[in-house]
Image (cartoon, rainbow, N blue to C red):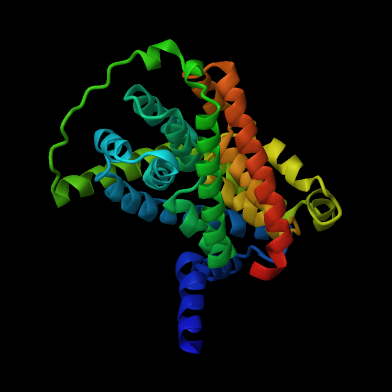
Length: 337
């Protein structure tokens, strides 16, 4: 058991966390005459290390996820979901959401296609909630920063929110709140040709390049904000605003995340810096969930597909779920970190 723990710690710290890269960058900056123990040097080290680490992980994860996703084109996904009914269909939709694109804006076109194909509204919303909030990338990235316990629990509660949210929307019978052009659309059942390994690998590499171009500016901003928080904002300020002394920290973090637009890769460096400064785990995860699930641009896109009442229900369900999850993680933080 001790050997397994040692191997796992090495994998988490040196492979996922790339601690060796942090040491290498620190040594390199010190050799160039930049003292990494002071604020400026520490910020530069944090920025370079996190930027390289996130972009490397991003490339590897997107390739793997895109390769898996090549087996689940929209038409095949519709057929899979069409075989299930009730809460089972919501669970399958939430699980399928874990192998789709990383941001909520990318998920909305798929949501529209599934709804146009006649899938139950609650099922499509389970997919829409799960896709940006919980994916394979979030599992690996959270594991690299917070450990496997946090990552696994985060994914589980995210799936619970997706299933519960979709089930509730189904029970409310809000089908008439979907815009007419979607309800009246005729879905084409186009057969998917069988792809070979080279085709899937080519598709995966293309997705790596396209996604990297899209998310790089947000990763750049996120790492920059993280570097400022990590080295320039006093720890006392973070603790007072987002620590034990503020019972409204989760609500503040959730509200702060909504106007932003990023994905899991852009929020990780900010979350890492906030946690290091004393912010509670639940506060940090609430912020991440709000950014990835309820970003303002994605809500504007979703409004084109659904009417205000359904949009309001969706936002309310996600917001309440995120806040509950935040306080839940605050309570169990001492047991899992």
